[in-house]
Amino acid sequence: MIQVTVNGAAQRFEQPLPVSALIEKMALAGKKIAVEKNGEIVPRSLHQKTLVENGDQLEIVVAVGGG
Amino acid sequence: MKDPLVIAGKSYGSRLLIGTGKYKDFAQTRAAVEASGAEIVTVAIRRTNIGQNANEPSLLEALPPSKFTYLPNTAGCYNAADAVRTLRLARELLDGHDLVKLEVLGDPHTLYPNMPETLKAAEQLVAEGFKVMVYCSDDPIQAQMLEAAGCVAIMPLASLIGSGMGILNPWNLQLVIDKVKVPVIVDAGVGTASDASIAMELGCDGVLMNTAVALARDPVMMARAMKKALEAGREAFLAGRMPKKLYSAAPSSPSEGKIAPKAA
Image 1 (cartoon, rainbow over the protein chains, first blue to last red):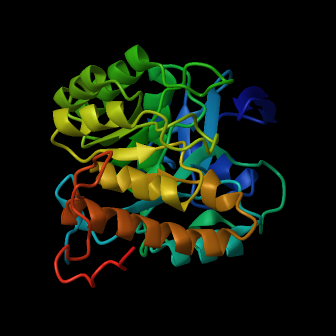
Image 2: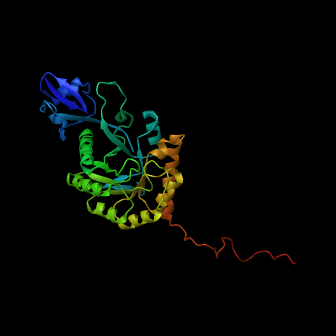
Image 3: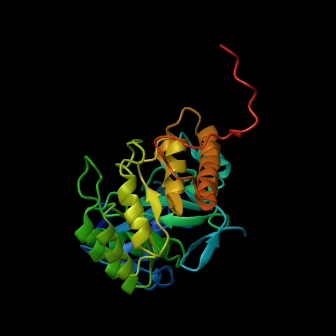
């Protein structure tokens, strides 16, 4: 079991998983999003290769209305 | 394109940049943006809702990035590091889009810019290849520092963000306009159409606004009014206003050929 933080909230998974799998589990697949892991951008092209491990801090963002 | 606004080598037909926050819904956002004629729209970058309504409408559907130039902002950032991180996320989110609006705020009450942090972030972002339009104070020296750092547009406040107080210091804006060569765009403080006209009459290259439109009783009508106000102000600036004088020694009608005064 691993615990990671996604957008400030704790999330548990059976084992380390690729960013792309995490996105699917969060029901965000196909959404226009950007991902940061431990302060570094994870480019879309690396979502499948990049593993989310115990203690990782993720930020998943979208564009919203703003001035 | 006649009299385009040129930012980082790209020409825009409209000198009005519009924010997409505070509208009732996306339909109203879209209607107001279209009425304004704006080509550049600011957007914010925020955490996505996890595990909530998966079919929530998205801003990108309401305002397709193929039709509008997105200007992701760093609203809510109080230091250079957070602003840089936010815009890196924006670039990733928008498929490499590099035109951005940098704002580093000083405190939550005034939303006045923190200029040392703003300059630090600007330098970092320029080094990373971003085209930085920068929200700043109306200090001509700081404006020149930001231009020297490589910013592609200088965006001084006319009054505090969301205040609608209008152009409080036209003299400082004038100094900024005189001192920098990149476009100067008033960002923040415009409350109504005449404020936008005044900014343009001073020689600003454009105006960025959000609250003045979004919080008008009729945002779409206000968006249309702002479009006209910017165009009027721009033309007045280009036309060159008459000099001001306290007394007119020259009436507009001929002094000769008047009928004889009535005999006493």
